[in-house]
Image (cartoon, rainbow, N blue to C red; front, side, top):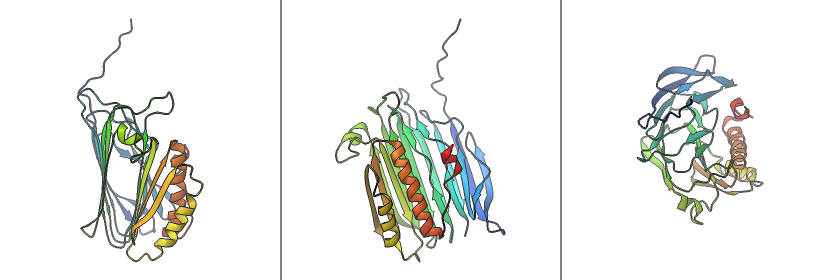
Length: 285
């Protein structure tokens, strides 16, 4: 006779990962340090010329109440790295006690370094209660590109996001001075308000911090806007400061937003690295 086993309501994952990258004598970026605790790993690096692709793995695949994931990355001088994930992240329905699912990322980008933090989308299940926090410390002549793509509810099976909330924050310091801070708290009400997400379930924020010597921000911004011309959702791209670019995307399909983000990566990388780049292979598997 089969019996259903209930999930231990105290079962949670707490995981930590710390990974450093340095520029080797060959000119390629390699791992300099790696430490982990719990279900967080990184795969062996792939390389697109001098740009290392690093895949962050979370074997459970999703987060439940009480899960607490923390990643710290340091990109040493002149190292170039792209950090991404092999699949969508998931924030599952919260338990009755409402305890948070928390993910924290801290990134340090040293002089002359390039860091692209481009995780795949995070699916927010109905009644999830999540906190997603990213902190960046960057040198004056370093480059950081980061994005967060949130998908509310599950399109397949018609499972909308009707209860719960997501807190999302990004803080960037340059030379120990606050450069940018953004905090969003998204509930089903905010999702549907005209002043919120206008009932569009796919939302992405992209931030780009350019070296203080970069002098073609307007040309880069113009190319990004041109690349979004055929985007079927709502988009906005602006230079908040001469070396700080913000882009936001809203659509009703996650695939639409994902394709726009991929196009933006190719455009931005061309400007910053002065060459064409490859999309991470994991995005096509």
